[in-house]
Image (cartoon, rainbow, N blue to C red):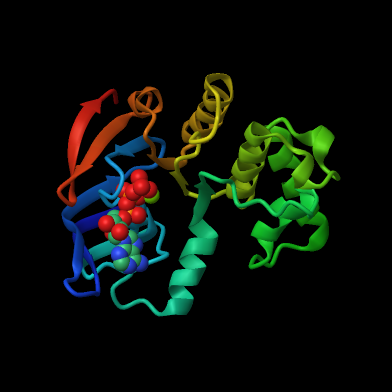
Length: 224
Ligand SMILES: Nc1ncnc2c1ncn2[C@@H]1O[C@H](COP(=O)(O)OP(=O)(O)OP(=O)(O)O)[C@@H](O)[C@H]1O
Ligand SMILES: [Mg+2]
């Protein structure tokens, strides 16, 4: 669970850019949330704050019961590594490394013994239907397969919250649906999923759907 209360975020400059203001969001386990909004409205800015990659200018961010205001960078790194999983639009997989290596890299900060690590990697890759590609370099994968590999990497540590920025951005409808199904499967296991998207079909399949407008979230619909 994560709670964001009265968050504001501005970027320094002349003049400064005020991106978020009065931004409130609660992320519940076992539920999907979508955030839509026009380009430049602050979706990635919000996701960076939710994902503890950036700090708000003001407001309170609390992730898994830890308020990040006074947390040390080390504590924040640990929170992120232990509880969060990320999926980005362009997958960010390393093309020359094998699929297995790409997923194992997500475990670098964990103290899991190597043998157990490989089992976790195989399980995650199996879940996304890429077992036959385990030892092949990621560059041979199609766009949809790369995105599935990115999901395997996000889920390999068993995160409590998955954050996805345009996870279906470059995919055709069939591949988009597969990604949605995989994120829903994680939701059904109790994971909280936050999805940023331009894809209204995807947004509408989420349990809660918000639009980011003038720096804060407006509710679009509720299915849960
Ligand atoms: N590091 C930064 N320094 C200064 N301004 C920034 C920085 N990052 C983002 N911005 C500005 O903040 C605003 C919101 O950017 P953000 O990337 O969050 O938008 P977005 O909704 O994700 O857009 P898109 O749909 O195009 O990805 C934009 O005006 C952008 O120029
Ligand atoms: Mg963005």
